[in-house]
Length: 163
Image 1 (tube, rainbow, N blue to C red):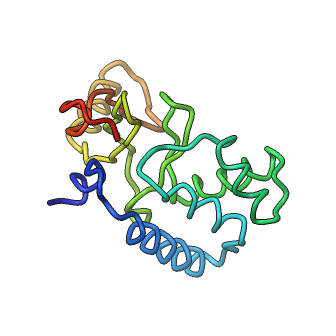
Image 2: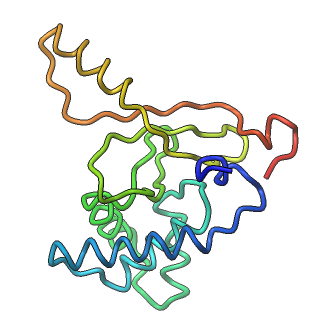
């Protein structure tokens, strides 16, 4: 089973995803001489608890339980940092954030989002990005950022077994 299939598997253990994400974040921040503060770490860890995107306000209770300032600006600053470093992606369709499984590789985000359970998987769509860039060039448009979000049903929800 591939990593992409695992995210849609109801018995998938996220602990490996969490540890890998935290290791990547620590390494990336060390290499870039950036601070991976306890709040940033907690926000990233919480986002990786599942493959379901989380909104900023869904993160506030976790910060409060850990004894941090749980005001919205605190979580937004952490999310902004994580997004700038490529550690999370913003899912516009859901106004939520999801962890990036390969933050060291610059790429455009493309996602499969289950409309029933909200599980989300990042997929490789180099050909789509190339086609968008070619079409944009033809009309004189210069893209700065791309994100493809596809709403549908994951294998579990197709069978009627909501996660």
